[in-house]
Amino acid sequence: MMDRRTFLQLSTAAALPLLSGAIGAQGQARFPIGLQLSTLVKHSMPEPDLVKTLEQIRGIGFQEIEPWHTVYSIPAKRLRHAITASGLTVSCGHFEYSDLAADLAGQLQYAKTLGLKWVICPMLPKAQWMSPDGYHAAARQFNAWAARAHDIGMGFAFHNHDYEFRKFDGTTGYEILLKETDPNLVFYEMDCYWITQAGLDPVRVLHQLGRRVRMLHIKDRKPGFPPSNDMSQSSAHFTEVGSGSIDWPAILHVAKKLPIEHYFIEQDHIDGPPLESLRASYTYLRKILS
Image (cartoon, rainbow, N blue to C red; front, side, top):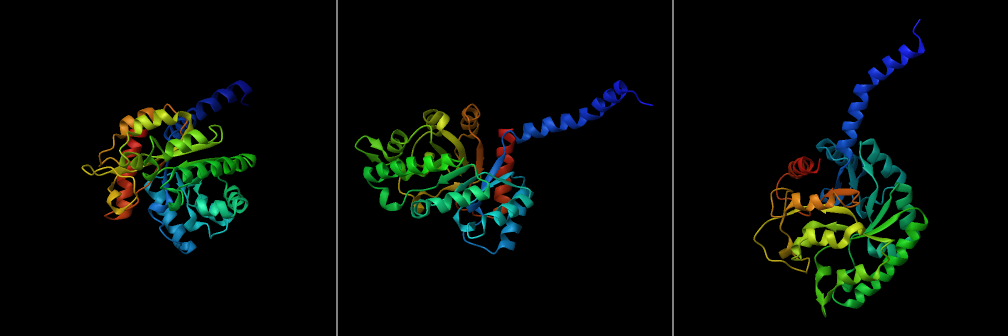
């Protein structure tokens, strides 16, 4: 008969390889890489097609996705099941400014049912881009929306493009948003491409945002083009991560020191086969992020 001491010794020895594997898995997952779903899903699609797309995303290696409004016609419980059944997780989602303004309670309830921890507003209405008043109004909205999200256990963040960095009498729309939103409630998803396209240094902006940046959007930029603040076709110089001009090692060196929770690859336009493009971006980012 095996005594208790012998049993514990054998059990511990048997567990060591599993424990070692778990530590390795956690180390790999310390920086999970996600995909902003708009990269592949530009419009609403039948649910079976979406499931196939999710499986392809997981097949590349992505651990999570960041959905946006094109898939919210699917009931939240069914959408969550489709995501998790594909081996992916979901904790952040983009919700349109106009939808939040029209039905905040409904949008937040959908996000809660989907299991999100973060509700992210991806863009201001274009009518608000061109004057400080538009950003003052957005800051008030963000504070109110963030407070409501906080009350039901979620966080709120804003995702930048290049238009927010237009100058208004010595300041920018982005600076207005930073100064006039509650730093304990309103956080930021920093899109490194659009920061660069606006003519700024992502490393410097990371330092400026500090603990308020909780997600990064990672996409690369072809070299040799001028900066802009207009979100036009002349601003679109997208390429695979690691093949452009953005200094990812420098950005991620700083990012790893901040409480950033999510890293999402996104590419607004892909020239070649989309899955091959995403595999190249994922492979590069995994190599330098691990």
